[in-house]
Length: 300
Length: 303
Image (cartoon, rainbow over all chains, first blue to last red; front, side):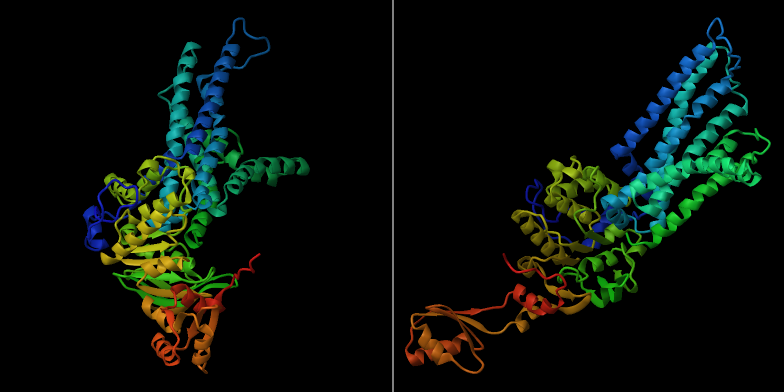
């Protein structure tokens, strides 16, 4: 290290003494170089030290708390004695989880925004210059940031899922509709929903890399998610449910999410689950790949 | 060592850097001068790998910046005061940079202390003054204790004490054998700091020489003369190669003749001289004379 460089006015440390030139002094740090692991650690530090990410995480937590509260009350209503007239719904433990997991759509929106901001904020704040000075290998930087963002979202989603379990399992037990924990359905539903949140949010990251604008990336992300179903709905109405529109609808993001998390083809027209998952990944790739290419080629 | 070879950068139709070549030696401060838009910052960004050259290349210690395995230990750069996320604290920003190279936390504290940021290190950068962000930039540049330093206008926003500190720091870094590349529009500071100058004009190098050589050849002999008989002495000195500029009743400036000749002529005609001062061209005068034809954004007249 360099204890001998001049001290600024106001510094309490002793003044300057000459020492050998930079690289010799730098060797005092040891041979450490930039590596993917170190770049990843730096990206993780960035994510966890930014207040906006915690606000978005709190918003996701609030969504889950509201959903769980609503579920507790609606379950109490469904199981009320005497039974509510006209209600012949058969509530299962899996159904409880399924209805709560549906609200992960909103979490996906928030996490997509978080992922987009993670990269656009580098450009809008100008910190991309210091970031690339530290990690000039842009592919490494992009991959480390993407992995850190996915890791952050995965950790948050896992925490939200745990909260769901902590509320829904006692609730299901109380009403004697406990889902079979040793069977794969519940676990597939949980893991696939978590995967859907991460994969879909990575679209936001790719859009952020492509557009470099927070507003542009978040708006495009929402349009990408919601314009598909709206446009397909209009097309179905206009074409009187033409077969090609029905076919097209299977490849829209929300439809793929449903087909993937269902665990088995619930409708005759559904795609096989691995294909639905693969297509979701392809959607992410369609945005991430050009985002990466542009990020590595454009001036910072 | 920083070496540029046929370096060229175009943005659409506009050429920011036009095929420049230079080599910056270790152990000296190289000043980088030029009018606004001359291509100084672009050259520095190209050196840091932030922009991609349209042609040619620029290397640091023999390699393009992106190919260094521990870049922060090779090169420290202050490219502009806005390269920080306003939501982080100064200390967080430095720790993030340090994490990429496994630089210990003790070193982060050391550069914070060195740059006098201790009292504001835990404050968010958005509350920093321009001077504080410049100090943060210098702290980040020094984090890896690199052998090459690139400073783009590092004294912008600094108070006089900070300016003097940067001047001393830069001189000391060069004395330690490091390569220091610094741009500034403050000629007085550059005159006190730089050993060597590279001057850009409209993307091209118009001077690449030691500071002393840059100032002297461009200047001409000028002498300030003060005497009670200014008119008589001016008449006696008048000649084809001599320009005399009257400043007031007792003072004039003579160009094209040295002080010794003026003194001798005054003695011959019996004129008493109160002041005879040789005037040297300043860096600013030499610079303005050299770059006059390369200024893209010229100021209007005074109100």
